[in-house]
Length: 247
Ligand code: NDP
Image (cartoon, rainbow, N blue to C red; front, side, top):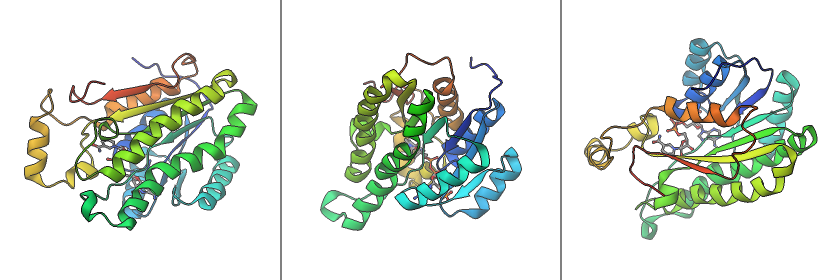
């Protein structure tokens, strides 16, 4: 079990006001981290998150936009202090078979799910190297490892995160910075609830544990990886998928 720690460390969680990200933000906050939760446009969800968790450091910007990321990382560092932990969680789907996929559907997913990981990691990694401490944890997907029909864009972005993280892990290994990936299976969030009910039923039937995962299960692993004591786990990809895909 993850221990409750006394820490003044600053954690940024992208897409941190809803779904998996909200659970990550709430757990890190509970464990004493200063949490900055970011989101894109759902103000109502962000306000509800703020009220429920008591996390006031909520920032609205597009993770696909490098300049916006630079502006907001600077603002977060001014408000809370240097970023020690980055959780690249924000993501979207724009599903279509490749023969019907538009360039826009391809680009939106690559920009939001993969470029964002470059944008934010690039902006915090220099400081982490200098301070000789950092944790970068990115949320990939089972479908980035196994492939999925209708998701060439999403699977490419999510697989890209794995290669990115292994390479960065090597670059910063001697600098006290660890870089890891979590690849969730089907987790009960808005993203999955948006799937047609009949299709979802078929998906759940194929999960060995016969149910969707909880966002909390992802949050617990993030907290474990973020811990100061986690100095030896780096460049790793963790599957949390109810046994659906064993890589
Ligand atoms: P949700 O759709 O519930 O939440 C997505 C979050 O990302 C929201 O906070 C959203 O902001 C934010 N976001 C989306 N686009 C942008 C953007 N361009 N800039 C900034 N923030 C953005 O997603 P989940 O919680 O289900 O998924 C979280 C992560 O986990 C994603 O990367 C997803 O791909 C991955 N994942 C999810 C699985 C699942 O079963 N749910 C399975 C495997 C992986 P706003 O609230 O403003 O819309």
